[in-house]
Structures are given as structure tokens and as C-alpha cells.
Image (tube, helix red, strand yellow):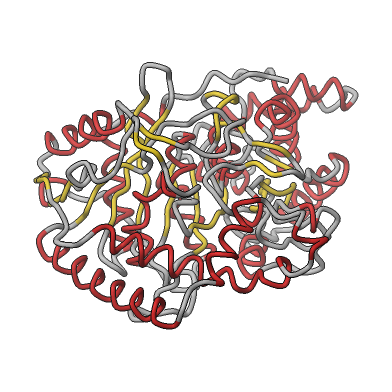
Length: 493
């Protein structure tokens, strides 16, 4: 950490503090070495070592948010500036008294709007809950708060988290950090866009059908879906379909947030993997089973060449499994979980406020039988065994994070890919269910950009419980690629 660098910034901030707030916003945004450009890990050190105050950090982030968030719409329900500055001053006062709450002390944080934060709106992206204010913190939020974070608002999400496109009738759509006219993905789209635009140091999210991974790919950041027992009390035989997880501008930051929010104890140290001892099974598009937009496979395979050049063994692999059975299993289990929404569906006044995709999923749940669910569970158990067979041969399985590049945010979902029609609103996301059904640890790593500058990512999947191994691969991958060092050209409001 360069102390002189922070002293220079501190002096500049000190001069700016004497100006009116409206002027200070522009002043903070114009700094050559903005505090918002620091990784979360370095920002944490700067605060702890008093190279930068919590007030300075909050001012810098608020200036950036006011400059760019109207364009990207990543952060919603933003808390009043004066209140946030008051909390930042309190955090500085605590530090002056020797009270350090944790590595996120005084750092701004916005939680995904599917989780409650005491005192903040909790809409879940639904007009039914547009006015709801939470009076409690979720367990995840409580862990982040105990680490010292200041909650500045929420991150945008699709209604009830449905679909990998973060739009809703309450707040509108969120744009990709690399092109605000394109979707940021979802359902953790606001979180990923907030990271990619450097309006947030780290972000929390959740993932059922790629909701940490797709936004990671669409915003050129790290999205990590942990093994399902990391974030809950489940086990290898009882794996949930969804889980919470962290996102970061790099893997080290992602690991730090994971340690903060995890229920399961994680190792203290994570070190970059030795790629020369790594075996990777490349699934690709499963022999053309998955429809792919042109360019997706090429970017992933080019990045795998870097991994192979570093000594890893990369081989093509195809699961010994009927993939249509896996889709049947997925839709049966996913739609079965919508029965809890039936009370909204049965109320005619409320039903009109539900998005069509939610209505369709509820209706699908009504036609399922016990035999359907039993068959789905048998298929899933067989899939566990097939995953174990492949992981006996490979350390990791790799495949693209998404089947398409970010698409216009005014489009709800892709209806076709490369000439192939999508028969459901979520079929275009099918590529993520291999890991979701396994409850596996999966990291999205960036693979670069197409000719239009649209980002893409690749899923690196490990055996259930091998979270440390997957994240250590990501650390090594960052050392041999530079994609995360390619920031977007942001458009101010």
C-alpha cells in the first residue's frame, strides 16, 4: 500500500470538504486516483491503516453513484446522502476510539433486493411490495453489517428473481457495465453492474439458474456460486437448487466476502493453484446440444488455450447422460418450488401484478404429479453419480457461462439462438443447470469480449464441497489473463 498515494488523495479530499455538497460531488468524481478504483481488499487496508477515512470513501462512492447510476440503474432505494455521511462519520469516530468492526468497516454496500435490510425497502422487484420496508436484517445481511459495512441501498433484480434479465415494473431495467443499452443479466444484475461500474466494492447475490454466473459474465466480474452446504445447513445428499453467494471485481475480494457470509467454516488461506497439475474437462456446447451465439465458444476456447499453455491438461468430454432428461428434471423441480406462490395466483387482484413468466411457472406447478417429482429426483441422483464419474477423471469441468452475449435490455428474453427457437422463457439459460442440479461450486471467470465489446465468461465447476479448489483455480487464472483489467468506458448521466 502506497502511503504517499493516500496522503495525496486525503489532502485533496480535505480541500473538497470545505465546498458545498453539490460541488463536492463533482470534486470527488474528478480525482485522478479515485478511491472507488481500489479493490475491496486494498480499500479495506486503506481504511484500517487510516490512509483514507470512511467519510472520504463514502464521498467518493456517492459522487460516482450520482454520476453513473442514473445511466446503469444498478443501485435502487439509495439512502439519503446526509444519512450515509452521518454513518461514515460515526465509523471514523469508532476507528479513532480503536473500535474496528471488521474488514468492511465503513465500506459502502448494497444488498440484492431479494433479501431484507432493516430500515430499507424490500420490494423483491414486485409492484406488490413496492412500499414494503424491512424491519429486520437477513442472516446474510447481519453478517455483512457485523463486518462493518454501511448499507447504502439495494441492488436491482428481476421480479422475485425470475429470469436472467434484471428488469421490473418498480425500478426498470439494469444495464451492463460495458453497454448500458444491453442487459446486465440476472437475477443479480444490479450487483454485477454495480461492481463493473465501480459503484460498489463487493456485492452479494444469489443463484438458482445462473443468477451469480450470468451477471458475472455480462459485466466482466467474478460471480461465485458456492457448494450448497457453504451457505446453508444442507449436506451432500440434500442439496438445494439455489444458494446465496458473493461477487467481486477479482477473486481475492470474492473470497473475502464469501468468508464473511458463509455458514460453513472456510480455510484461512487460499493460494493460486498449480495449473501444471490441473486436469480440465471441456464440455463446450455438448456436441451442439446447446444452441450458441456465434463467438461464445471461440472466446472460451481461446482462454482455455492460456490455461493449457500454463501446463494444464485440457480435454473434450461429453457426459454419459441424456440431456433432455436433465432438462425435464430441472423444470419439474424448479416449477414444483412455485407452489408457494399459489396464494398470489389465486387472488385475481394480485395475479394481475405478477409477470407472465411467474404466472406460467405457477401454472406449470399445478399439473405436476407425485410421479413426476419422484422421476425428477431419480434423474438428479443419477446426475450426481455421473458428475462424480467425470470428477474422478478431471479436477474441473468447464463450459460457457451463457449461450448468448448480453442482449438489449428492452428485450425480456431471447426467443431464439442462432436460428433455434427457445420453447420457454428460461430455455436460453439451460447451460447453467448442469452445475445447479449438482449443487456444485462454480466460478464465472471472464474470457474477454466479442467484436462489439460485449463480455462473456466461462463456468469452472468443481466436485461438490471443493470450494477452495475452485477458487484457487480462479486465483491462478487471473495471473495468466488480463480481462479483469479492461474497464468499461462509462457513460455519465
